[in-house]
Image (tube, rainbow, N blue to C red; front, side, top):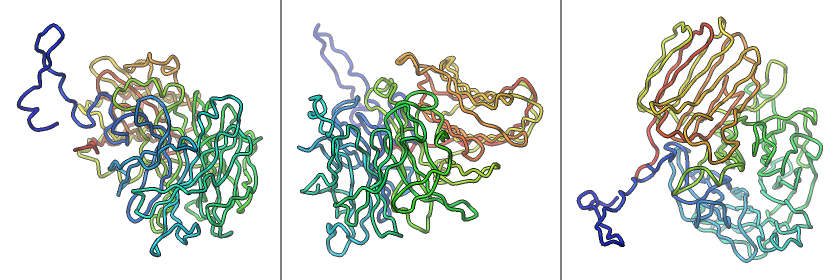
Length: 514
């Protein structure tokens, strides 16, 4: 807001001649439901994260973006950068549609050895690999080859991009869904590997220069969840703390998620530079997140070896209702940035955990500690604050259930419940403000989870319109959008039995200022 607007309210003359005051200007990033420590666009529509890459001290986040409306439209690549994965600087749109089509999802890599030949002055270029989508060809109804892969390059740290003059680099041979290339450098074969979503499975391609691609293999036709189209894959190698190595393949699917709509599954196995081999049975379905609002997430490329983390971010929405959520100036946000880790469980099975990155500690403005105490039936934590990072340790030796309720003085309530005999978590947002915009939004969401040795650990990150729950070091994650009529600023812990509760509530500050 400009300084003079604090001194003189602008006037509007109505059709009747009556002078009326103009509506007050909303402060930057203070609109109703605007997330305060999650990434969201300044305005208009956003969906999938794209092209995430680290280069020369900057984390790049590109994303599917439509600059002319708050509902989905012709896709561009929006762009933001960060030096800490917490605070973000908006940059101009990176990629615009052209005569070949709209710019759908993809990835970005640093071409360290200039295999593409696009680098200048001895410096490696950034190469974006993305899906072109020919909307007119699709709408004609007579063609299936309307998606194909193109590339663009940048020699100024991603500020400007030049599309390759001979795009597409991977034409379509008549497949309706042929998209979302995730590219990585595979050192053992000294080549680039592209992981591509093709209808209901994955195809792998190889290139030495990011321009000429050869198909290697297929995976997934008979494995995992198949309730919808496969999208937004990612392939990477991970190690456990004791040095065991596995390859992880992320695949988003729409619809067909565990609680309806879109979600992300993953596979664990081996990749030899040509084929991915799943080490679990084809019927095994592993979900990265059991909530309904973590979709199309992928990981950052080129994280420095000295850091070594596998860093992930997802689109915090669901295609069942993404176009209908009750925001006005903008629509959609990203999840918190998470570190993925490979762990071996007590049954000797490998699983992927998710955990908010350590950098979020820099947003803490105060901490309210919960001393270890026995609680019978009910425990209230008044807060007066709604930007929270809550960590609870709960001993359930004398109880079969626990409920954590977030609410406000307007009657909005959000319920997180664990039923020990049923080994199940539930999240119920049906009584939390605006839910009527889509009939499935108020559904109760569930996730199986068996606690060990009577204890459960919860980490809950609450923002103006979202809740992200991480259970037992991130073995289970549930991400949910919520739209309360007033901020949720009170916590109530209850049980039918006796609990021992300890932990802390960190109050966080906003990342947005101008």
